[in-house]
Image (cartoon, rainbow, N blue to C red; front, side, top):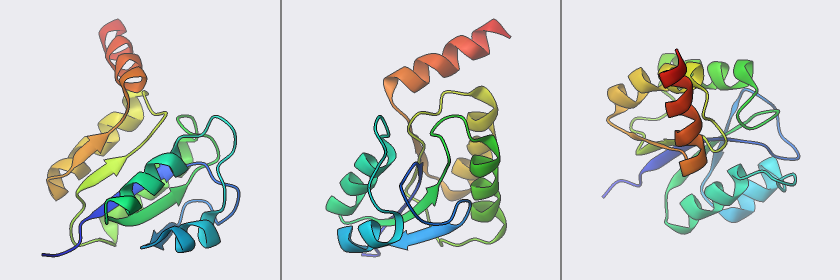
Length: 132
C-alpha cells in the first residue's frame, strides 16, 4: 500500500516560507523547520501525522490563520505543480477564515482529501459565513 501524504500549514522557527518542506521522519521535520513558537499547533499536527506513518509536506507560514499570502501561495503550489500524487488531507490549524477555507475546497475535491481544522476554527468559519 502506498504511503499517504498530508499537506500541513503551520508556524515554525526555521525554513523558508511559501515552499514545501518534505518530511518522512521526526528528524527531517526538526532539521527542516525546527521547533514551534508558543501557541502554534502546526508542529503538533505534523508530529501526529509522522507518528501515524504519513508523509508530510510542511508549508511554513508567518502566523497560523492570518498569513494569507503564505497560505494562498502554498495552495497554488499544491494545485499547479502537483507536488503530491495524492493527498490524504490538508491540515490548517488556526484557520477559520472563510476566504482561505473556500480556496481549499476545490483542491480537496481534486485530491479527494479531507480538510483538518479544529473545532474552534470550524466555529469561526461557520459564524463568519453566517454573518455574510
